Image 1: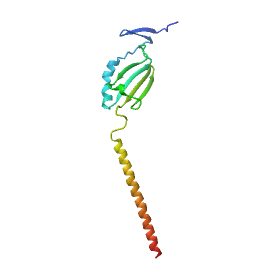
Image 2 (image 1 turned 90 degrees about the vertical axis):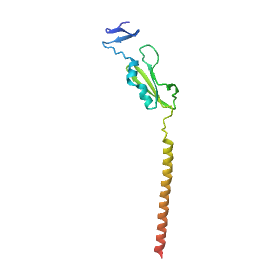
Image 3 (image 1 turned 180 degrees about the vertical axis):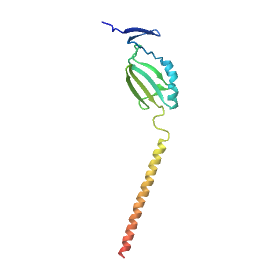
Image 4 (image 1 turned 90 degrees about the horizontal axis):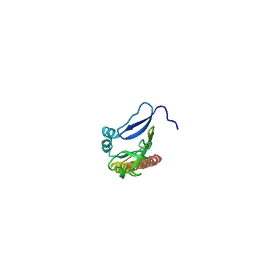
Length: 145
């Protein structure tokens, strides 16, 4: 078994990584999460999330959770979606959802208002047609006299 010419063994935080090239970029996920305010951003939108690397892990794990909100374990298929992204460094899954569901609080009232407005417009349209029909009949009966 041959080793590529530029293959190097790098050590970072007691973990070994095989490198094929001149440049290695190590990300400190803890600092990155803290500086991005990911927890605050999702909390401000009343959303829960679970960011997981499902394949391509450099530390040999099958999957690793990089960040998750406090109530991420309460997310189900009904109240969340899963977005899968493939990159050069593996496959990532971000599960995002709202524990209150996707319907806003004003939605039932809006539906009731639209149904009521539809009935009012239907009644007004029907009464206009009936009045015009009566006026037409009366005018034609007067013309016969």
